[in-house]
Length: 275
Image 1 (cartoon, one colour):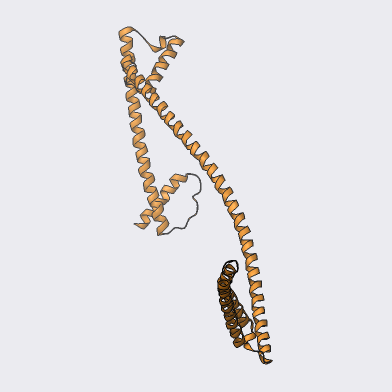
Image 2 (image 1 turned 135 degrees about the vertical axis):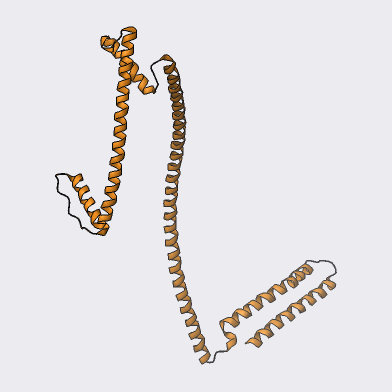
């Protein structure tokens, strides 16, 4: 079977290339099978083409016979022959025949031409209507395309602005980070210096109550005492403004002075205890 296929392939290639040399190829089962399938398809196609050609030849003979019959019938009935027509008549006849072929009518009668022309006119109107729809759709697409292009341009400009702003902000953030790192380093340096100073002062016997934190706490307490004595001062000032009954006003003034002195003594005592 393989040899038979190889022989059929060789015969087919010789038929295809004719007097030209057959290109070299590797002969094996795979290439033989492919070429054999191609030869079979080519043979089937050639057979189909032959059948179609023979059918067309047969139809051509039938059309020629029918044309001869109609021509003989025309000559017998009205003694008319296309050869007897003038050049103008021949042109008209050819135009009539060409029109019948284009319109695909069964004959050249008016009853065949009118429906065909009507159908052609309807097709023309439908085509024009379709063209108008396509034009409207195209105009809409062009408008949308223009809007899209404008939007794309705006987006590109916004993107450029955003990138520029981002670069500026990034540079600003980097600068702040550098400043922050510098401040952190300085802060750590100050803390280290404070710890060193405190250790040195502690080694020299300085009282802890005189440290920065203690002084800050005392300052806060002094401010609180001043805030508390403010109402007493205002009360004392209100009594000093009183004119009648000097003895009673003097008593109130003395009481306010004692309260003020008492508060001051209490603060000084607290300050002394801290020191």
